[in-house]
Length: 137
Image (cartoon, rainbow, N blue to C red; front, side):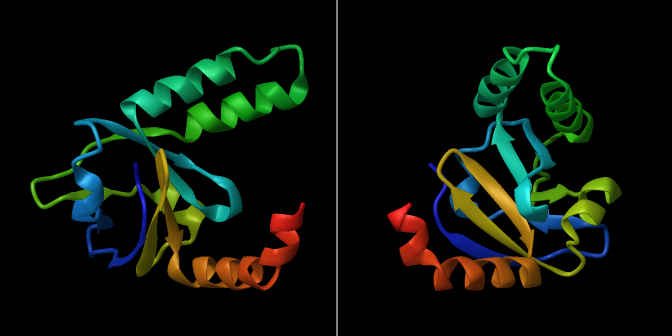
């Protein structure tokens, strides 16, 4: 289970340190893909397989389903941590997420999300202001 919120800087080689609290629960290989609201999502091997199976079960005659599958699989990269616990973010993922210097790394139960710090702060400010309304729905 991934919980908490951490701030880490992108280094000069476009690597980001994954918090030690998350490293033990990541398999040797994991997957990074584009997520909602310009976030990146890190899936463990197990969670990636579950997500892949869900997407494979979608009706391919539906245009939106085809688009979701294409976007998900074409933007996903297989990754692993280096000896210092860092992961490389490719240009495509960095550009999409707008991560340039500082990133927020947040636990989201079975996945990890990476956000540009400014984007995360704007998002969380908006959500917290409307938290009562969101919870009521």
